[in-house]
Length: 128
Image (cartoon, one colour):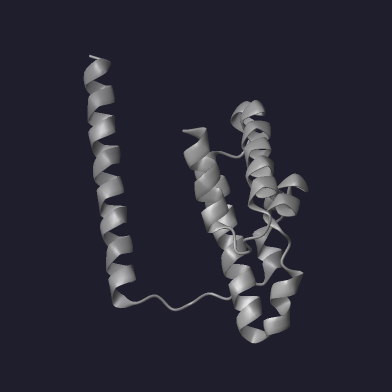
């Protein structure tokens, strides 16, 4: 499972360079965050943060091709705990959502409400 998480994070990272060092750094980051317990960043959160960084770098490169050479290697980014930076500082521009994305978001919200209702009902039944 850890190997799958490491590969997923590497795949999500924008710059593919020195894969062995990157995989090692990602593995260390996952272990470091897991060791923090509930205060650490979970794999899904780390994956989302990596995807945000990818978006930030993609947008920067779209404006200026030279920006790509300023994207840190994955090993550097994970070893320096850059994933803990405030992503608001990365200058990500929002992209208008398509009607399909809006509808998907609505359906997800509705299903989450349904799950919450079922969980409440089950908790109420357990308390009786």
